[in-house]
Amino acid sequence: MNSPSHTAPIRSPRSRATITTGSPRSISTSNRCATSSCAPRTATPSRARTTAACRGGLNIDSNPRIGGGTGSQGNPNLLPFKSKNIDLSAEWYYGPESYVSVGYFTKDVKNFIGTTQLNTPAFNLRNPGSGPRYRQAVAALGTTDNLRVRDYILRNFPASSQVTGTSDAGLLNGNIFGLPEDDLFNFQLSQPFNSDQTANINGWEFAIQHRLWETGFGVILNYTIVNGDAKYDNTLDPNIGQFALTGLSDSANAVGYYDKNGIQARVAYNWRGQFYAGGAFDPTYVEAYGQVDASASVQMTKGLAVFAEAINLTGQGRRGHRRSDNFVTFAQPGYARYSAGLRFNF
Image (cartoon, rainbow, N blue to C red):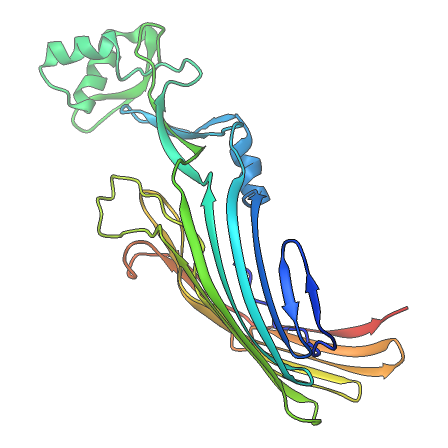
């Protein structure tokens, strides 16, 4: 999750009336502006995710059990996201470097990438715990107890096994090797796919920037509300996968700034609400997070400035959990980070 930027542009009022045709469409007067747009878009998920997902390779986890193994397989046939977007916005520039804006957006999205489970053999690997030797042992012993079955195979099939020791109960321990006549190992593979689900994402964006007369001081406030019609339901059966939108949450920024006489300074609070991060069968949530950042610079001469910056001044940490807040999946301590230097523009 990238924290919202703590630097925001200072806008100046429009100076003349204009109308632009096409998409987007905007109408503005000397201090008001309304904009609308409607357009299809094609986009891909994060590069790291698509690079791994689009490969067709097969990876299996080490040490599969008698009941089978696990692994993952790519999908080179994945399609990019497609969406139909409508964006509306209105701005009022009521003073120098001061404005109020509101925007509404809605997006109908398809070709979401989900994860499915495939049950399949891999690399012709044979399961020594499921084959003629295993079935003969179960028939002779009248039990499926793994320790006794292993002891039977080690004693009766020395050519395809290796004894490594004896347990306190007098049962043999060792390795049993797979044979061509054994059953194939079953692997449960996770594979990405394009879901046939569609979803709508919509929300509002509110912003205000106000300069405090000619003092050089000002404030910037913005708040974004995001809604989606595909949310994860923690109360449903965990054995059934769910389609849900990831990464949706409200966010806000509050900035106080000073910009005058070659001196710039900003203090910002950046916040993002809790969001669903993924997991069709076992969800992961990243909890709400906020941090305070600050920066300042002084123009020494033309083109030369001294600057200092502090990130996460309060040392805010991060945390994530599963269905319950008590099932914590990660907890990262936060640390303040400081930097300073000279900046020269040619």
